[in-house]
Image (cartoon, rainbow, N blue to C red; front, top):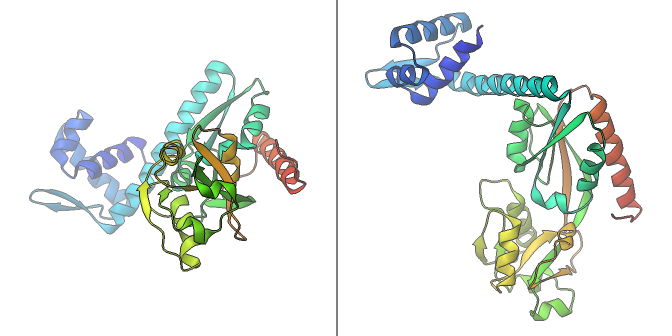
Amino acid sequence: MELRYLRYFIVAAEELNLTRAAERLFIAQPPLTRQIKQLEDELGVQLFIRKPRGLELTIGGKHFLHQAYGIINRVDASIKSTRQVALHRKKTFSIGFVPSVFYGQLPLMVRRLRRNKNLEIVLHELKTQEQIEALKSGKIDVGFGRIHIEDPDVDQKVLFNEPLIAALPDAHPLTRRVPCLQQLSEMPMVAFPAGPAPNFSDMTLGLFHREGLQIEIIQQVNDLQTALALVASGMGFALVPEQVKKLHREGVEYVSVADDNIRTPVIISRRTNDNPNAVMRLVNTILTEMVNNRLRGHYP
């Protein structure tokens, strides 16, 4: 199967109109129609339902579109990394991360990896679900997040569980004590991130719901910096991972939460059944050392 067939199919599936697809591909419509038909014959599956006003993907077509995206993305990533190696004689190692995990020990891992002059480290800020797709497409080699997502192509492991703390306006009375969830629930909450579930916001809200507590969401935002800015302005409080307290923000004070088991995991995601290369083995060694340091109470 030729890669151009996949690219033609993807454009046709996106446009759902052969005339517009042909225009995007800078080819005539009849050859595009023939090549789509040849692809269907080769697969033994009808990919489109032809209608008077355009095309509609079949169930098989929708499934194949997902697979085609993955194949093309992996090929493009391989081409890019090969060119980088040829030009710089460096191996590229790409890391996906959610911002809240990069205020603690993980930057130390990046720093140690960067000591290798033949290794180029590329960082991608991605939500956990985006990391899963990026791993499958080959865009990243490893991901660090906080949400467990079932996917047979990706292996996830909890590195450690981290306490959650409350970010409060610095003049608030609760900064002078160790508040419990009941006391926090009497304040408006700034939740993050916004977007599709599952996410960190769902996890923090679930802590209150499990205790039968109602919580008012005053604002839902996409990133931690915006959440802290709203806390500093006095709009409410936010629950954040403990390592975020390294991020000093004027007008914000961080306090522990009295309730037990107020924790959030730090999860590493890797492709299932990938044979670890030399770089991944080094990553695993560094992470084992970091986790052991946390267990002994040795923080960076």
